[in-house]
Length: 173
Image (cartoon, rainbow, N blue to C red; front, top):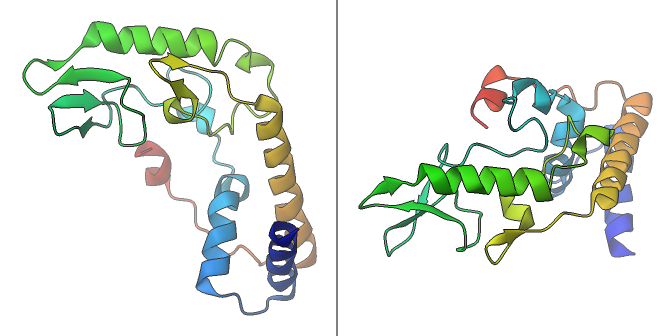
C-alpha cells in the first residue's frame, strides 16, 4: 500500500542519513517519539490511575460556549465535569475516573506495554460511556514502532540524536 511505501521511504532515508522533508520527518517521528524516548509514562502516575495516559479530569480544562466544562479539548461533549457558574463537579469527576478504570483499565495490569500506553479518555468515550480500545491493535502498533526505531538505529546509531529528553515533557503532560 502507499502507506507502507511511504513509511519504508522514511526508514530508508533515516538509515542512510539522507535528506527528509520536514513533513515526512514530522509525520513519522511524532508517531515514534514515545518509542524513541521511552520515558516510562507510568513512573509519573498516581496510584488510582496507574495505567494508560489519562490525566486527572480537571487538570486541563476546555469550556464550551454554553459554559459547560469538559476535561480537555479532545473529549466529546458527553463528559462534562462542571460549569462556569458552579465550578468543577468533584462527584462527576470521581464517577468518570471509576467508570474509566472499570471499563478501560481493568485488565491493564497484564499488558506488556502498560507503561507506554497512550490511550486516554478521549479515545474511549462514546455518548456518556467508555468503551475498551483494541488493545491488541495498540500492542501491534507499539511492536511495529519498536521494530522501525531499532532497525534504523542498528544501521544508523545517530539517526535520532536530535531527540532530547526533557523532564518537563512528562511533568506537563
